[in-house]
Amino acid sequence: MLDESAYIDTGILGAYYCPEPLSPIAENALRQVNAPVISVLSEVEFCSLIARKRRLRELSERQAREQSRCLRPMSAKAFTAESR
Image (cartoon, one colour):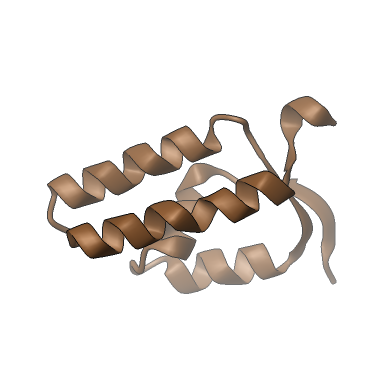
């Protein structure tokens, strides 16, 4: 059963877009939400997460660029807590 809406934390977004041990759990959680709700800060937090993963050499420069582009369509479409 899909939840109508739920706040999606940046940690879940990071696990979904950047492969890590918790990625399958994050993907499953996101599939259960009909209308994701993210903060207006989610894109900034996500970019910070990508930059940290890049500094730690967990992502290549190309991967970091690709992952940085992933959130933009979602942040444009998703509801924000402030707009509700």
